[in-house]
Length: 142
Image (cartoon, rainbow, N blue to C red; front, side):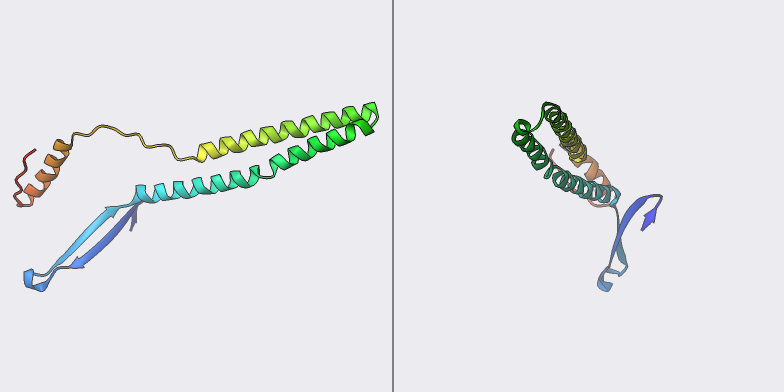
């Protein structure tokens, strides 16, 4: 069930006729759960994409440097300088792409949870108060 962007999971079960019959219906807002699942899926896509893009970059850089090392001595001075500039451009662009891919991967990475303190006695007391409103008596020693 969707209402104003919220995703609500509705479950129901019939109660036994011996106890008066009826139904128990539970509504759960799973909006945040679905958003977290989507974020996790996109994070995985970003991680894999970053890996696939980054994989060929090192061999490209190494091949350019290898060509430079093998050909520089066999070329004229001007041609060797042109090869040096081309190799420097390739290496610089590969480095920039690697950095960009790393930034993309890091951006998609799930942040660690921010843990905060909780007064457990207060939480239990609030839950018990909800049960007492329904007529259920529970004795607690907090």
